[in-house]
Length: 119
Ligand code: FES
Image (tube, rainbow, N blue to C red; front, side):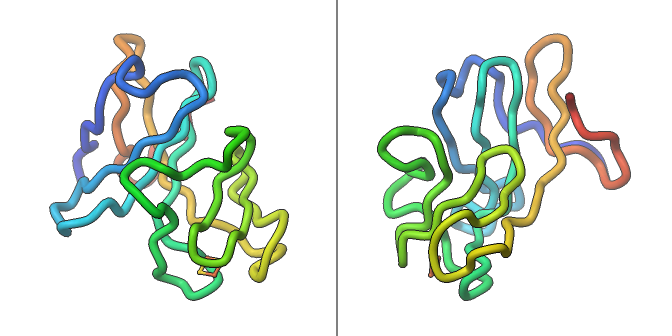
């Protein structure tokens, strides 16, 4: 499977999140959080119920302080870098990582399967 272009790094403000519908499913299924020159990709599905979308409105994936990913349904918090639930009903479970590629030209792609994680 070919890499899927999501956006450019500067399309996501530093410290912010954005949702994407890369497979045309009619809703965002992938979220990206930018931390400086690093991007973290996760499936937009809370492990508490498995498929519940995380955001309560478009692109609202982070808590008020921007320090964690939050599930709007029951308030679970997830570490942005590891996806591990740090508070809430799915404590210890984690989000499913979506491997991303950040090119030298600052394009963000969903990596083809088997591709190396960006550093
Ligand atoms: S569905 Fe996410 S915390 Fe319950």
